[in-house]
Length: 601
Image (cartoon, rainbow, N blue to C red):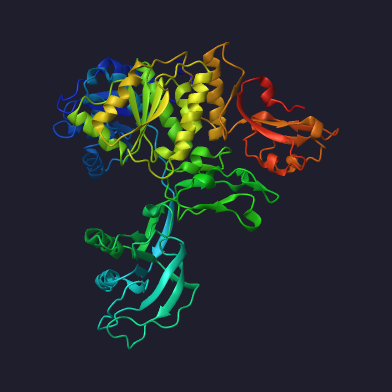
């Protein structure tokens, strides 16, 4: 293992506690791994109680401290603050993820890798402010909507809109407006909804046994901060469960209506939501000169947060941070890096991944299988397996992502380049919103690895879709037969995700040896390849050069000639859509020949 590019962390102290000797610590592997990281290793058996003075002495030095315990993290943080310590603190779970396992005694290299990854700090989360004054539109069909509004009247500014499909007895007292109409469509988010209503009508004040409605009007518009949908009709938004401020329940389900009412009461005031993605419009390959090219993110966004740009921004897409639910599908498939995930950014995820894999290797670990998971679904399964089963195998290295759907090809390729024998992605049994991009990238990775001669049975990169910890253990078992191939690389993840992808692909190709194919065909929509021009039909109009967003196509300034740089091509299709002679086609492929970096033709 070439560790020459590792960044030293000579001032860091790492505490690994055996948790009252419920774990067997491999002191030799831990010491070896921490030494390679430039970290001072300290061990304990009861750090959170009888040996707390050791922790306080460490944070009193002002040096960064990593504690291999997440259960007692609040206690350690509180004690450090009370002591006036200012040392940077980080925590990592080595108990459920490594030590509490049938193979826990052999998990020293894994613990070393987990410590190395935890030492990479997470940047602050960017936030999007939302504000709601409690102006609420209650959509309903019967008395359930009126009863719900009555329970919220002391907290929210309410208007009830009934469909008129059922006869409803007017209440004896008009506590809030009750109108008729059916929501045709809706746009917006918490604090900024607009609903288009057809059949809008006011009630006659003389309504007796049932509401009598006035003349209807289509196309009425209602602006509100919150929408309570109790109509039982299809939802107004795609992926409606993650649209903040839009609350929907079956009016026949009393418990669901109760939960909705409790949630609605809290939607008054100012709120912050994470800004899940960063977007650089200048890199977007969506369109040029009123021609449409790449639509990968538009095709996959489950919430409708991504729309084609307008006006001066019509060449790029537009991403609403207020609507975005953070699935990461857009970042997973963006070929240019115009969209990147921000929670955390790719540089942090890649740095943690590299530290995990290299830290494991430096402590003597071999043939690691990377298990990527999220906090909401993955962590409970891993913890349940540790507490009630055999735990994770010693060679399975868990790494938490905010959303597994964000996993891009650069991360997958880098994992294998840095020595992973296999990659598994832990997902719910029922696929969530925005997972299509992840599975597309798993297919790309499988094609790459198979083409580069790595055995793919069992598959090197795959998803485990389960809600059961014991099924997780069974699904991991075949991966234990996988072994790494070749010397692991140690390049730093510098630059954009596409630049990291280039580094990783070069390392994988080099590791495959001289038998590796120079050109490897890839599935459609792969983010790299060639644009093939039928020279006989080309008139050298150079329209392709004017729309190419990456400069892959260019003109020779000295002579009439069209030139192409394959290394810059992202397979956006703008050249195909623009060519008046229709003589350009795309050829997705991995080209390892040096000429891909030179302009030719």
